Length: 432
Image (tube, rainbow, N blue to C red; front, side, top):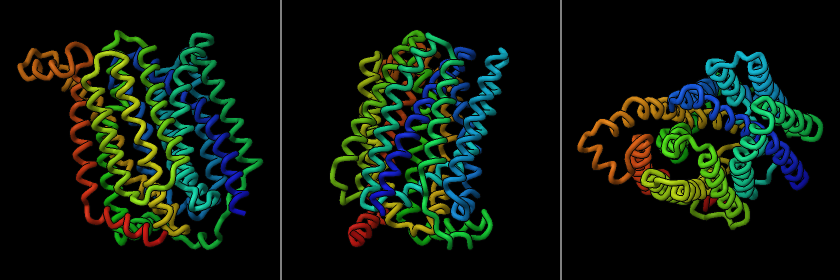
């Protein structure tokens, strides 16, 4: 039975990957469009910020709702609303009235749907996939996600030249229809009837939080991952694209190459995770991988001054990420009872991802109003930093990568020695 469910998961994974490719192409095209309209890192930051804020807020209440309701229905409705958002962008674009404000509003709508879709998908994965294959599935997800990162920008650039943004949006909508039909017609997600006894949405969040208070290792893991997410989102989420465009005289091909290398590193990591034997020291693997990503990725991105350097840094930054996700998921699915997973995953999303919008908006502000002006001020300290990261447009954002590399590495290294987090390895080993 479990083997048959796993086969259904593979079908679901493939169809969702096709839909993800369409969304990736749209996202890349909209970033280029937004930066071309404003020439501001803040505009890119706001696109991501508007997506994550409603996602985090709704995550506070979504967990109990997900545990009490049909996971497949939640995923279908969420995907349908997100597709309606893309259709709205296409309508405004066709009428010649598309503005940054419209994109911000649609991104907020997608953030709302993600607050329900992602935890429901996480629970569905636990229902369809045998426990011993969870880490492998994380590797599969990393593989597909990063394969999309490689081909999404490349295909978007080609299709943009061939038919413009409307063509990309139409392909995105077509990929949604395909994934929607596969989920509707071919996928059955097992439900547990006892979940219907959950209380209100807020009570569900409180239940998930109460569980984490007893499981201090999981709670500390989420807190440290929140810090790691904060430092990474200060730069990669919204500063990487403006920095490369600034330092390459607006060369979108250079940006596409770096994004492709970022995906290639993730693909390599995802393949390794998918086929290798599960790590026995999962908590340690999470933070060693994060430390390596910050040390080799962010620091080399900071000192790099051409596409070759940035591409190598992108590979170093992304290759360890699948190891982080796979080992964290393996811990969560082993430690959290099935009936509580929706609530606990919702709390995890609120805690672990709650720092992401802060990092996004702060990153844009720091780039436009602090680091870029500082590096162009002629200050002696700016001159000293310039010998490390270079000078001119984008050098301030390069300094930001230097800072996140140091801070992210320090947090990851410190987490390796946290007593409660280290206990997670012991408890998982005793269960195995």
